[in-house]
Length: 418
Image (cartoon, rainbow, N blue to C red):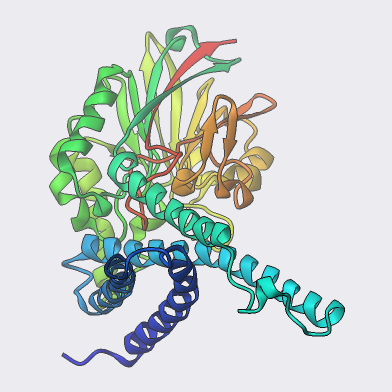
């Protein structure tokens, strides 16, 4: 089978980047192994260049395997290539620092010693063994961290409990427990047993209400087929409600026809219903207890920064009569852009979308992630006046098949009267 020209170009570019980086970082390898025995040195050099060959093979495989049949394989291949490049870039910074130091020494000799080297440097200015070792150590950090994120972080579900105080909450709902999931991305899963364990953790919390805030799949409705039985097991006596996220519409896939895309979305919507989830497409529902009720509103995806705006909050909120309104909106950018300015009667908004970048640090009340440079609200609970927003970190993962620091989340929100 002939490789398409654009894929061949991609392969050549990646291979060139690999080769240049590898040769540059290899200078540090030579310094570190210079005192090894000849046979040991050859072994380490062979192992080093073997990684380059394997990476090239991974790129070829990525460009040739069928993405429809081998999506997870492509993901792992791309991750392996990315990890290798990141490691070499990190190590290369230390090698570059070493070159700057060496250049400074050469300049010093040329200016102050008239180009005459001292006896100690008569053989030329050698590379720093310390910086060479530092380069290799630094280069191993991204590989170790990302590997740990795949092996340990991808399915390390964490239950996060928060109490939300609402001034108009009816007495009948004081203490109601809401379970939220978001960003399942079932097409990325490769461990069905672990996913089932996550749902068992959710059910163990015995929530009254279950709310899902979008991105059930990556692109195609068929991705969730093997997990329908698992997500159907979610238990919540007061109701199970869901919405769509930006990935659910199939916008990131090339379809044979517009009709095929529409049918895919129709099948996905039916999957929600087959699992017993009441999907809200710019709609609202009521939850009633002892003659009192709260409203659950759900909008289709509405996002800033170029993301699709299928949602229509005006339609979803039309003629809603309830003391408390809870809105499901996938993208948290919706909160500042439209919800707070135009719908001040929305008491609580639940979102997801950011995944917390699947990378960051959370220690006590300290949180950092690259997500914060893209989204003002990217994880956990936010309050402005009497309005609240909770951003779920996501149940699944996308792209990188793991998580480092920002772990998959099951949210339990308890509503209390003010």
